Image (cartoon, rainbow, N blue to C red; front, side):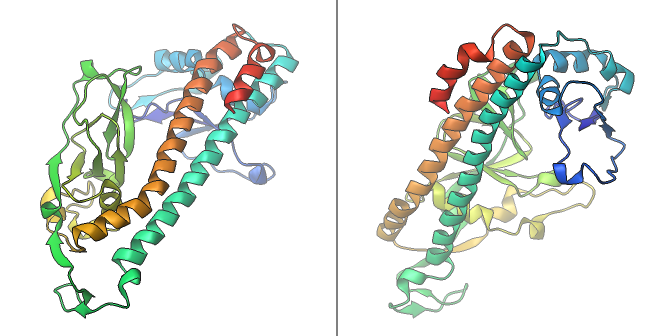
Amino acid sequence: MVLATRQQSDNLPIIGLPAIVPQEFEEKSVIGGTNLFLVKNESEIDNRFLYWLLKSPMYKRHMKSVSSGTTVRMITKDAVELFEFDCPPKEERLAISNFLWQIDDKIENTLAMNKTLEAMAMALYKHWFVDFGPFQDGNFVDSELGLIPEGWEVKELHQLSRFRNGKGLKKELKDDSGLYNVFGSNGIIGKTNETMFNTPVVAIGRVGANYGEVHYSTDPCWISDNAVTVQPSEPINIWWLIQTLRLIDYSQFAAGSAQPLITQGAIKEVKYPIPPDEMFKSYASKISPYFLQIQNNNSVNLTLTNLRDTLLPKLVSGEVRVKDIEKTVSEVL
């Protein structure tokens, strides 16, 4: 097991958090970077329970209280070793770790399913808009992008969608128990009770190592100033927009090397072949089921994640016993 020893941003609170070294490396030499502690567990507590203990709120509070530094927060080995907790009996520790891993496995399986659905959706997109598969029996005409099906037009992205930069969220408006997600260049970075968008929106990371990453939300959300936001205009479908933006090579627009930066100006001018409205509606009807299933899976995972995170401190502290909740939770799983 390894522990993160430092963090550079409160948006990514990883200090002290654990990761289990895969079994295939257990008998091999493992080299840890200077940002990691390698934990050799020689106690009677198995690694799986220890992993969940080190993800509990009480441990995170301890890490926050003993860390030092301003720009970069750091912890020491001694600070980790000073963490005290009430240790459950061996049988209960085993029950807790198995129970929580069962929930985590369900989450991982759902994420894997989403990757498959996204790959299938992208294959359909390329069949329509890259290979023009459904239109091969029709006529094609010359365009500035090459041959495109007759009746299609070449348009720039700003003619199909609305661009604007994200906006920084004041510290006092951040709320870990807030109703809405806050997106940064690397995806969800927090919660708030304020909304910046109430209709579907795409966020493109615009600065740093995560520039060009494409994330989206169909629920109300806030998007920080580390991202460019894009919303579709009629008759453009949000799913088409997401896939189109994911295929762009953003490196061609990046300025700077140490801290790459892209602006909405260059992205807005990217050109695409666009079919007549009726064909767009036909494509939307075919692609929507994939993304609706992904959304449903995300909803299931949110429920499971909240369940796991709610039960974790109660199980570790002994407030709740596995045998008392196992039947109820199994209905969710």
